Length: 107
Image: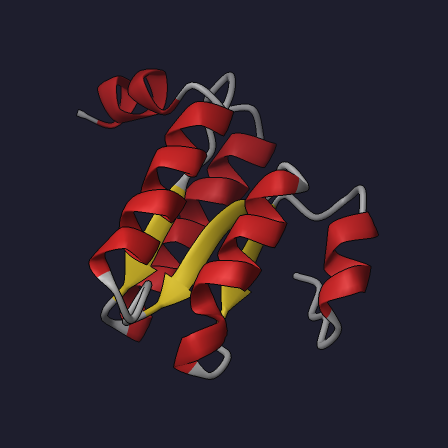
């Protein structure tokens, strides 16, 4: 697991698939959009946005990019998602980009 404190280094990091955003609330939308634009899956601390239009913008953009965006309401969820990514890296699942296949494989 890599830890980056600077957003620019996350955007440029080619080995980083997922980012966890735990910054001050007003930055959640712009940081989420920045990471999604860079092709990163995003786990974002609650609230995902301070406004409904901001939340809709992030959700719509994540769907458009076919990337995972999750609002994390409980820190223990992060561990579960980390385990899922480890399974994917071990090729237990073919691709995280196709979330439907992952969900079907888990059920």
